[in-house]
Image (cartoon, rainbow, N blue to C red; front, side, top):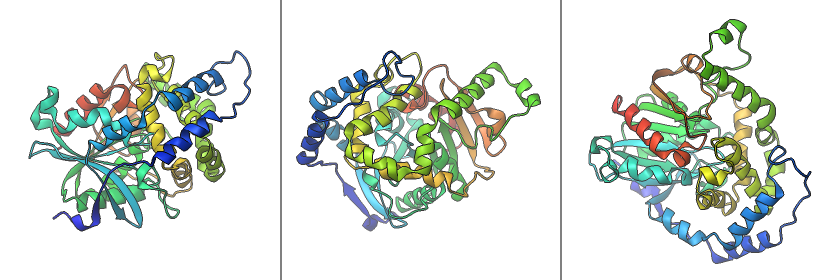
Length: 386
């Protein structure tokens, strides 16, 4: 039975003073110099960020997006000493299958806004009612309205245990898990910590546990398909050119946090760089892949809750954790979008892969970039395990 006593309704209601403070800070941004003519190769160009920050200050309407988020039932509950905020969207279909959706960094529950309707009420979106899900969408501990983590040790496995307790508290005996980025750490970990209740795990933007660890020998490289070679090259390029943010967050998150918490332009640049680099390269600018105001709403969940510090801590916990993926028998599905890097032969070493899809569009933020493909793949995978 649901333990409702521990679950409190929640509504987003940001004080106007916080919004006024944001506008004031943006107006007083102290802009850096830059090397002329280098584009995005050294980070976010000043001209681009100035324009985006000005739109954030004068054109973006938080209240409109706050109201959109508040259309979904939201709650908080304390698990393992940590406040957890979550959306809980019950399907109108009584036989819907429970599914917990986990975001990553630099994402938030905002990532899932375009998939909530089709997943929870397929009948209203041209789908089959038999594919309906009851959705539980937590803000990761340390992110958004889940508030900063209150002690060290919140790695993906501890988050998975907390989400297993949340699903139990909501009365869900058997459920599925889906996630991308850090959600693709947490979802498989849910299968490991709660195998008696997790019917299946579906991931996108998967890395650790789904890619080679360390070097790859010549014999294996020679067997790679063209697609695998491309993904391996993309992974190698990321490790040499694209993971400075991860090194900083994984080693000195607190030092970084001062800039992210004090400067909205700093927080904006830190996140928007990833939306540029991790969306499909056919989009010259991130807002060509993802709606600009939707991207800013995601940034707002970091700024308004001062989550720059505590969200970065997750990287430190992961780097300093002994939580290395152990083999899992839970049926697992992998969606590989155009910018993802999983390679099946490595994914199969520790996961029970029963479903593998590859797409020629979409990128890291699949729920925002290619919601139709993600919804279709999630439905298809869970038909086999629900």
